[in-house]
Length: 275
Image (cartoon, rainbow, N blue to C red; front, side, top):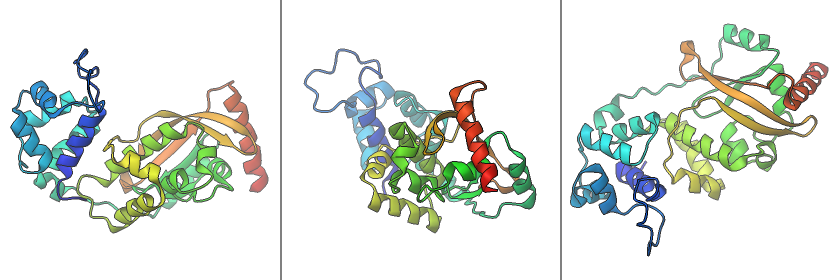
């Protein structure tokens, strides 16, 4: 991570929010970029322009909670991103953030995963390595290169753009999830190695990483394409495994009676034939 993480985050968020979003309609004329000017951010946050410039430049590193809350409001940050902003500004939070690393899936969790026979289910760690899959997930990922890691599948595999039908939104979501998982001061060598691999191998990853989006995994619709059963839209939810808090169980189910449910049923047939 750079020495001015806070400044990079503020600059990225300032450049992404538009005057209209910030309630400054009618001020867009003669702008070279679509983002906010520093003086506009300062005015909206009720701080001086000089103070805000020092924050972006890394010359002021101890903003108050009130200033951070005001900036989070101006940039319309979601709770996870607001927490990330506070962590960037407080070295004590950054030092005390625990680093979890567990790639071992317990026998009890593995058995539970196997019994999920009506949904796609798999377990990932903080790096989005796929640690375990139920039969439906095995069938879903079969034949996809780099499917052992969802970030590599999305950005480095030639199969990623075919598998994820709404690739841009999927990629943006995954980068925001990865930044949330890495935290503001990541010292996990394996995580840093993955981020550097993605940077070297994908201009799209670099573009999205530079946005500094931060988002924890939540429920969302996944628009997928399987080469044998066709298109599927699965409602996806993530659950933290409390006995291994580095791990998450991700499940995907189809709306009953929908074409996606029919596709999922055909996927189940493939899973049984391969068993």
